[in-house]
Length: 471
Image (cartoon, rainbow, N blue to C red; front, side, top):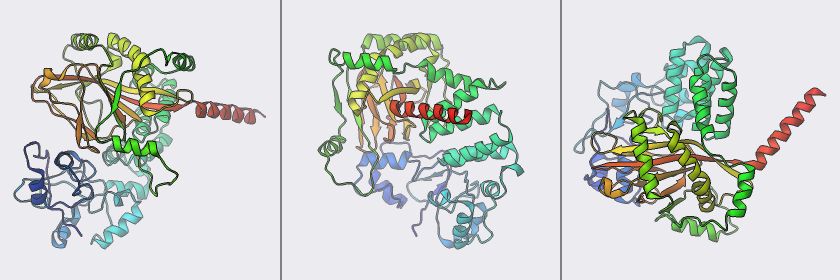
């Protein structure tokens, strides 16, 4: 069994990009699947600094020390742990301190098992009486025996561990107890989006909004937000098909490090791989939008906001941002660009069939990186989207030529000057590179695709079911 010599503390001190990754790896004595010999220095440093599913976690998922120390720490075990794992320093690593809250002696995969399986695994590790944490207690007895505070705490812990189905299950049970609880309905819909079902998220939000709940402000706000953005409709798609030849799309390229994968997919072949990997595609397009217009959008947004930026809209990876739809003039300009440039570009880049599929924005936000006391970078993460994109609104010379998007797969940074767009599959692991001076402005968008034919078939099936009930 691998011994992970880590300390539970927060925040982690690994923030300097001048650290030599090779010596860091050796000093830390870390052996995890995410770290391989083939990694470049940039990939290794990104993993050691940001990786949520491996070394640095929002919650401890696997901290294994020698048997003697484990036995003294077993009382701190939880199947919904609350402590953060970090390196204490580069000289010497030590086990969790007495100040630690709860840790887990189960791996990430093992924590996904049900309470009975987890109990057996823990018994093998010395916790023969099983786990009495809140998660296990709720799974054994059901939610009826517990208060709302406990259940919401478990929902938040499940979200941190990306156990979205577990969180949805708790919400559904709470809805059975109180079908008009606006907070629960809103959270359940959001969880559907986190798990990747964006259409179900929208359906649930619309259904909840129609209920006219007394405390349903967040629900209506979410509905207003996704309905504010331009969406491709039947007539628009037909017109677009006719105009495609006449309109010249921006020139784009496949990002470095992703070309080989694209070539292999193009060459194809009849052989099926044993385990199909999720596609990871990244495209870079310069000069998509007019620079002067981009500058105008920055100026009017700053004037409109008067310093009132938000930092809490995205729970997993918070950014200093504001929804595009919150600024009327910016929204009007942005929707026009979605129709004229951005959606046609995405169709061409990702090979999306315009006849069968329409694109939808469900979240888009103006982001501000500020080297002078503001947010300077964004840690490694995946987006909860089918496709994501960033639009550069100002030139790199305004923030020292730094910034851009680092992609874990290629180990490279991709960026454009003002008006350029970097687009990629939402499952691509990436981070926002740090800036050391100036301000960097981008618009980020999370996009999903609706299969039109599938949607029409579902509507027909629904009509048939209604007719059957009437008969």
